[in-house]
Image (tube, rainbow, N blue to C red; front, top):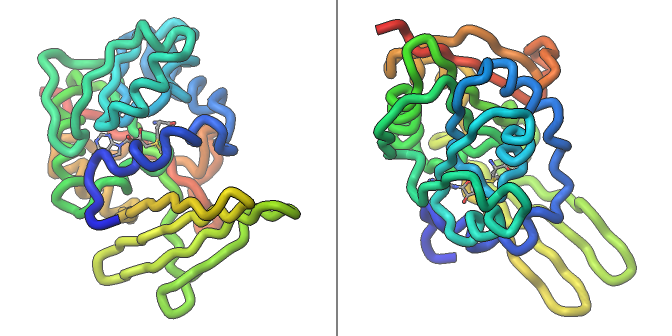
Length: 244
Ligand SMILES: C[S@@+](CC[C@H](N)C(=O)[O-])C[C@H]1O[C@@H](n2cnc3c(N)ncnc32)[C@H](O)[C@@H]1O
């Protein structure tokens, strides 16, 4: 990997993405359907439609944006996925010619934007895409710098007689960035699946929202309304766009 840009994630991960052990979509879909209240929704970084397709099945019209042609192609291959309007573009700077009741950005993807400027620009674009009184939902893991020792971390995620999956991370606390390598060793050789993240503290997200004409109205430790506290591994934040 020489440089990381908006398309790198999709080009590296799209072939294996749908086979990864992601949490089931039902809880997120119920949460988002309730907030959409029958209105239309925009998914930032829609990917292969893990959330969008079941949300459409719940009667919500969903539009999407994603920077990866490979991820969008996977969405298009799925039943129902071919009917979701998707724009190829960068969520750190997009405009839409209409507004939505709900915008959402899930599964840590706010962290896929590489610095605070890009993340703030994403909040500004999302605020402009949501109608006054509408909501922007962001779901991401709770940053935990304590897991790093000397700013490194390594773990065996899966192992069998013919394969091993190891994750190796480097952390830069001065920039809040993490470079991850997911190394898959098998009889067929070694494959590298990188990810480059910039994590955001919940309080920092709240400030970004305030700078963009939104404010935090709810925060949970999960999609089932679990309390958000010191033990939370996940953060679900609901921002409401100010009335005009
Ligand atoms: C972890 S996947 C999440 C996909 C989907 N939201 C889900 O929940 O399964 C991250 C997605 O973000 C997209 N992405 C990464 N950086 C992006 C950017 N700057 N602009 C638009 N999409 C981006 C990738 O192409 C990928 O589809």
